Each structure stands twice: as C-alpha cells, then as structure tokens.
Amino acid sequence: MAEPDLIEICPVCGQKSLRTIINETEIPYLGKILLYTSVCSNCGYRHNDVILLDQKRPVRIEFKASGPEDLKVRVIRSSNAKISISEIGVDIEPVLNGESFISDIEGVLFRILNIMSQLLKDSNEDKKKIIIEKMKKIAKMRNGIDSLTFIVEDPSGNSAIISERAKITYLDQGE
Ligand SMILES: [Zn+2]
Image 1 (cartoon, helix red, strand yellow):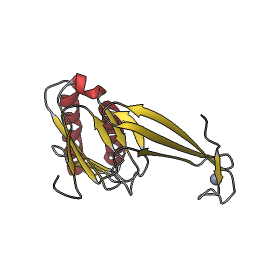
Image 2 (cartoon, protein in one colour):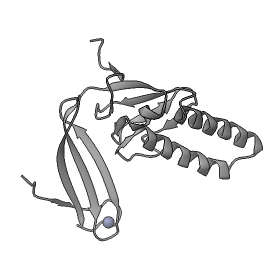
Image 3 (cartoon, helix red, strand yellow):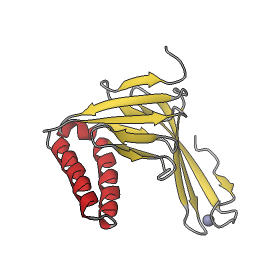
C-alpha cells in the first residue's frame, strides 16, 4: 500500500533532494485525509501539509472551548488556514506561520503562548501588560474559568476541529 516516494527540487537549497512521503489516515467526522511530509536530505528543510479528501469547500469552523476536557479536542490546520481566538484577538496567519499541523486545542494554545512570549521580549511596558492579560485569559480557559472561541478559516477546506460542537459554515454558498 506504500506510495512510491516523490523526489523533487528543494525550494531552499535547489538540490533534487526533497523527498515527500504521503500517508493516508481516517479521522472521525472527516473521513480520509492525506498527510504530506517533505524533508530535504541536503539542507534539512521540512514542510508538512494535509488534504481532506471528503471536504473541499472553503470553510469557517467555530468551536467554543471551555475547560480542561476541551483541550484534547483535535485540530487539523492546513497551510492555508487562519486561526483566531475572538476573546483575545490572536491570529495565526497562513502567511506568517504557513505550516500545517494536526494537534489539539492545548497544542494550538501552546503555539500561541510561544508567539506571545516572543512578542513580550520586543514590547514596551504598555504592550507587555496587554500581552500578559491575554496570557492570563488563556490560563483561565485551561482551568475551566473562562471559555475561548476558536475560529478556523480555510479557503482550501482542508482544516477541521474534530468535535460534535464545532460549528461549520461553508463560505462558498448558503447551504
Ligand atoms: Zn534543501
């Protein structure tokens, strides 16, 4: 069942040493997905992407996370998706951080906290206060005190939040 590996030109070093491995897997509510992992054996460049075979329409997914058990809800983010949290106004933009991942809400929060602690270093006192407030809100969500609304927008339709409570809106038409 193994697909033959693809070997392509690496976009970073220009050598024909970029090997892509494709894995197929099955996810509840979503059906089949393809995971692409490309690694350059010459320079170490890595890229991941994901394709949902059964969902191809531009999509907006909303999920309200409110407590420790929601931290385990799985999130699939393609390289085209933007993730935002409405209560704290944080965005992970596709252009800035265009890697795909399969993670959970906890993992997304961890990424956001990482970005925030980077920002803290380069901020003045006023900005620091704002960032620390946002970090406190994330901590409250993790302790089940506050809820946070995650919004994933993906024009390629290759992202998902795997929960019965995820609200899905297709962006190409009404129904
Ligand atoms: Zn390379």
